[in-house]
Image (tube, rainbow, N blue to C red):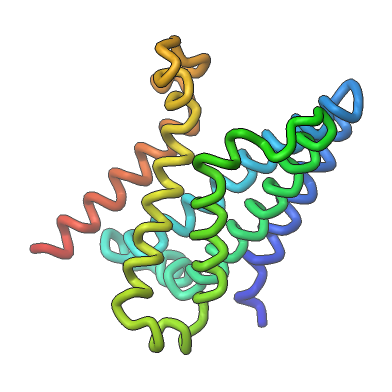
Length: 194
């Protein structure tokens, strides 16, 4: 039962991020806007752990990397629980500002949450056996899709509007973490090909 703790950590991180946003916000509307932002940020480390969990043991076999690999499913479910709290915060914020349904949710968000839900529902050994190679396709597409959403979405909207992004990827710690995770995945892939 103790390997389930990353799921509860994700749920706790999401609820704590909502509470922090509501505490810091000057009013209810700003509080929920911050809650939506903070829950997305709280989800990111949980996602990165899931993203690199299968790569780390190829680079460095140690008890902690093997534990990450063994519990990867639970880290993924922890990320999903936190990210679904993000969805609830985002929906409630957009309802408060009378912009419902949210525009951003209708383009990138719908497919992302549909894929995430499919990944959650297929996070069992029996689903993996039944889906066969399609399980790998679903989970690989989902992982890389979320990687690009987290790493590039802060810049994507600004670039589409021909504006300079408000965040600089050279100073953004989230971009650093994403780059580090990508390097780990590439190095592990190269090692498995040797």
